[in-house]
View 1 (cartoon, helix red, strand yellow):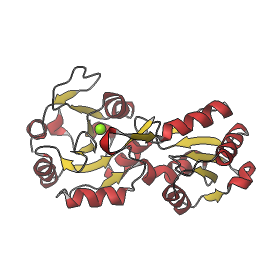
View 2 (cartoon, protein in one colour):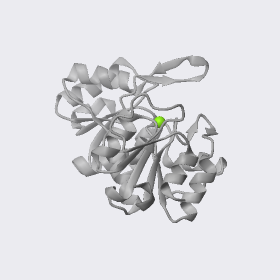
View 3 (cartoon, helix red, strand yellow):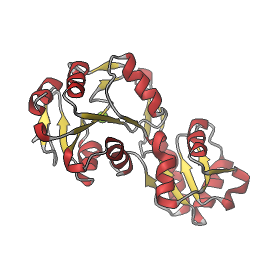
Amino acid sequence: MLSALRGFVFDLDGCVWTGNVLSPGARDVLARFDRAGRRLAFITNNSRETGARIRARLARLGVTAGVAFLTPLEIIGEAIRERYGASRVLVLGSTELADVIRAAKHEIVGVGEYGRATVVVVGNDFDLTYERLTAAVRAAARGAALVTPNLDPRLPIEGGEFFPGCGAIVTAVQVASGTTPVVIGKPESPLFTIALRRLALEPHDVAMVGDSVPSDIEGGRRVGMRTVLYAPHGADDKGPADTVVRSFAELAELAGV
Ligand SMILES: [Mg+2]
């Protein structure tokens, strides 16, 4: 099945790398895929880094193949445009988040003018205040669409500690406004469909390879891609994955590269 596919989309954390360390065999196998003419893309739920930074990190680790490097931050402006057209956006989140939305030709609306917002974007906001939360909640309650990179409850940091994640703030806005967020990251479709478009391939010609059943396997299936669960320690539950591999070497063998 995998040997006939023309494209492969890889998850990053827990699949291609963990932290800044590539999985065993990943660099060599990805280069072999590339030499064999398979088109490659990388997608991650990381909402703090742009695709360009992900691409640079991969290059530093010796991975130079790939036509698309997508994070929610990378596509959120495009996804808002696809759903709602050019929008007036109230942003709860980092300046990087506001920058990418502005770069996608949306108008950024200030906290004091929340009534003009047609979309509220909530990312992880290290400068969160009650005033900012109030503006976001009121805008959403008035009918602005609520959009978020992901619903992760925690942002893990060094030493086993964590910050509250994007999902914690989104939930506050959701509860107080009585609205439901649109999620840009996996398992929702935008990262997958934009990756497919950049690959210029149909879903049935492409496999999604990742270590998470709920985000990679479910998300890939939803758009019609073949799915490969990367489970280096074996899979307790392969879910609906078409194939399970324990290593990049096994993946290469099945794909015939
Ligand atoms: Mg992963």
